[in-house]
Image (cartoon, rainbow, N blue to C red; front, side, top):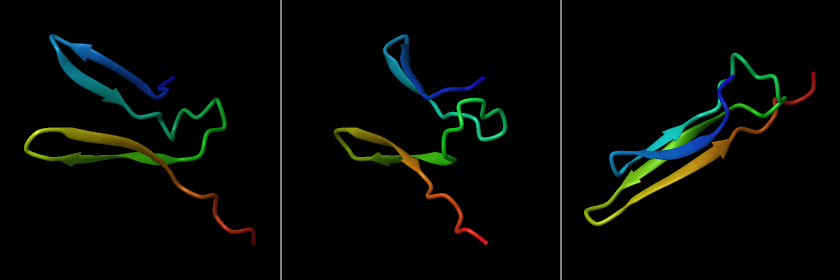
Length: 54
């Protein structure tokens, strides 16, 4: 099961996105947005809204 996680390997940050295929926690699908600047990295987990009802 892949859940959102953050940790470091040899001082480098590692970000794990949750899996949309093995979604046992009923979390909404989403993605990781990464913005790289000369002096920083911004990481944000973005949830997608549920689809409209049919």
